Length: 258
Image (cartoon, rainbow, N blue to C red; front, side, top):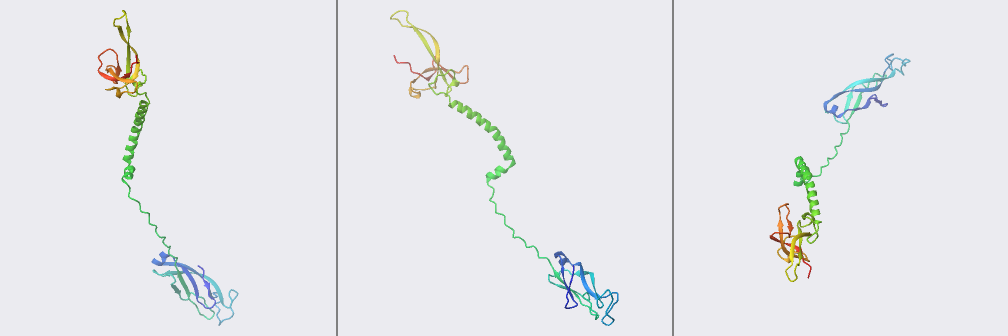
C-alpha cells in the first residue's frame, strides 16, 4: 500500500484495508510508505551544509515496507499510530505514521422469500405417487384394457346382429342367439273327399326367434307357436319345429291367410 505525503506536516496519514476475519481475530499487515528522510549518504542537517549530490538540502525520498499489528476486535475507522515513522526534517524532527482502519461492508443479507405453503397431498395424490400402486395400475391396465376391447367388440357385434324375425341359418346369426328352424309337410290327396296324406317334414329355412308365452311377446307378423328346443349338439339352444313333442313356445312367422 502506498502512502501519500502531507506537505503541511511531518506526519503521514494513510488507509489500511483489513478483512473482517482479520479485524475479528487480529493480524499482521504489510504497509508500504514513502518517507522524506535525512540523506543516508551525507547525513546533512540544517547545521552542516547544503547536502550532497544525492539529496536536496540534506533530505531524500525513500520507500519503506513496515509490518503493522492489527489488534483483534478493531473497528472500522479506528486509527493506528506508528511513532517516528513519519517524515524527517533537516532540523532533526520526525513525524508519525497514522493508519485509518477500513473494513469491507458486510454483505447485506437478502430477505429470504418464504416458500409458498403447499397444500396437503390428497388421498388420490398419495395413492398415485406410491410405486407399488403405479405397478398395480399398469398391470390392471394391461389386463383390463384388452378384455374390455374384446368384450366390447363382441357386444358390438352381437348388437349389430339381426333381431327377431330376420332369416338365419344358425343361432349365431341372430341378436337373440336363437334361430328357429322352419319345417313344412307336403300334402297329397289320393282320393277326392278323403283327408290329404301328409309327407315327412322338410326344413324350409330359419328365422331369428325367442321364447314366448303369448303373441304379444313377438314382433308383428309373428305369433307365439309351439316349438321344440334341442340342446344336444351345442351349448346354445337351437329352436326347431321338426319332429318331436314341442317343449316350449317360440316366435314363429304367421301362416299366410287362406
